[in-house]
Amino acid sequence: QQTYNEELGGTRFRVSSPAFFQVNTRQAERMAELVVARVNEVKPRVVVDAYAGVGTFAALLAQTVPEVVTIEWSAAAGGDAEVNLGRLENVTRVVGNVEEHLPGMQPSPDVVVVDPPRAGLQPTVIEAILMSRARRLVYVSCDPATLARDLRMLVDGGFTVDEVQPIDMFPHTQHIENVTVLDR
Image (cartoon, rainbow, N blue to C red; front, side, top):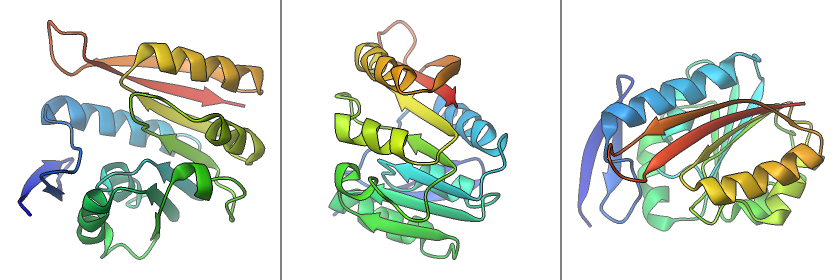
């Protein structure tokens, strides 16, 4: 299977052809910098990177966070994550669905980063976040409608929306990523 290399924030990533990676790498780098900065603001000990893909956020977070746990089901992305994260002793990889592995995760995360598919978060994932001791959630979304739906449930569950930062991935199209920061 074909692979190629990308670089974000001075870190190289192997990406297989079926695995997802933002093609606008300049904006992806800005998005990753924003995610890492918002996570680091609260000085977490444990961060869960859910829907971790090839390990982009995890690799960058591992430079400052004592313990990072990734959750990803995609076999293609998992192979890339093995290469991209394998040398990082403070990263634990969980292979499987976020819906199965986030609920009741121990140790409970201080911060959860989610970058779900266009369909957004399943209710079981929202419930798991609400039941965890996470004090911050950084939600990366490519779909404003599912983001709004999920934010409603998260706010009803006790989180407050602190920041919504759109990042224009493809100017003059509808493709805008949003990085939303929620605290409780």
